[in-house]
Image 1 (spheres, helix red, strand yellow):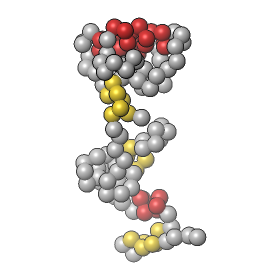
Image 2 (cartoon, rainbow, N blue to C red; image 1 turned 30 degrees about the vertical axis):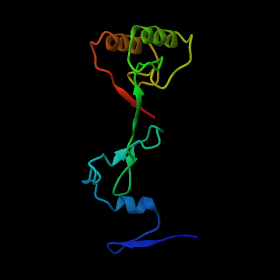
Image 3 (spheres, rainbow, N blue to C red; image 1 turned 90 degrees about the horizontal axis):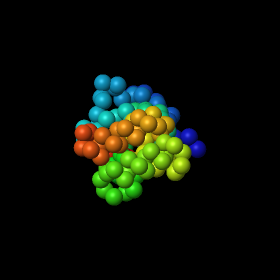
Length: 124
């Protein structure tokens, strides 16, 4: 079954058609959240449709490898073990979001543990 509808005199056969009918000048929804987002985490940001778009909810602190609620020296050691491929990757271990856990992530984790950099939240 195919569903069609009319918006401002234009026939639309899919949600994608309706989404294109919304001006690109509208960069935020009614709540002020961005309309263009990677809502499903597949690496492709698209225009979300609806009055209220997808909103990510922070689930933890980047670099808090042991889940202790802060970034400490013990997290730096765990991050180093992950970078050396001695331990498995955790969702909070890719600090710079380059899809690789390496020495740069370890350095940023150390800077956060020493309170030289601010902690960053991550979402899934």
